[in-house]
Image 1 (tube, rainbow, N blue to C red):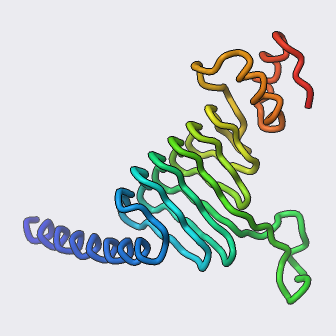
Image 2: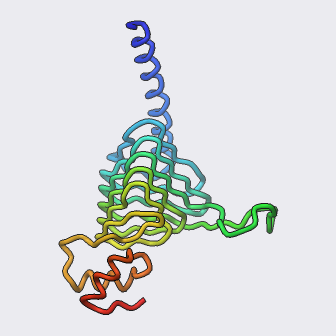
Image 3: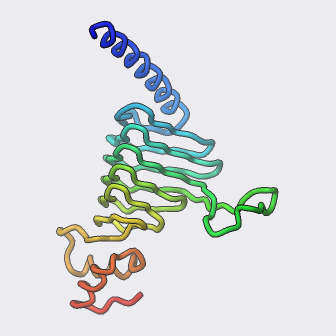
Length: 202
């Protein structure tokens, strides 16, 4: 048993050395602030686009950032990204016939920058699609799939991700204004609750 534990410790140290080597490569290839923390093993940054990460943010183990040519992933300051989070700037469009390929023998794709505002909290196993902007101070609950832009100061979750509530420090007018602007991503219950106070039009 002691020998097995010793072997495990050696392999663990080798594994950490390998991942730290990769993280150093990412930090030299992309625009990543020196206070950013790779919080665990298996984190992968990939692609010929830009990755910009500001100060005091972190990302959890086995998360994946894919940035394609001419696209950018930007993560603000003091952003908490949990483990197994996937962020893409390019992916295939679902609504197409995968038996055939179009122009240049390729599938139709969607692509776009992903911008995550300051002070956001992204829960475990979240998938963020290309072309998404998440407003600052927003929480994205675990296992969510983000398919549309999300407002600031909100708590969201689900597949697709919807606004469950706005943070309590917002006043009624601020909630109303954000609700109008982001009506398409409000949860049904939130639309109903808000319509009892003020009529919100799509």
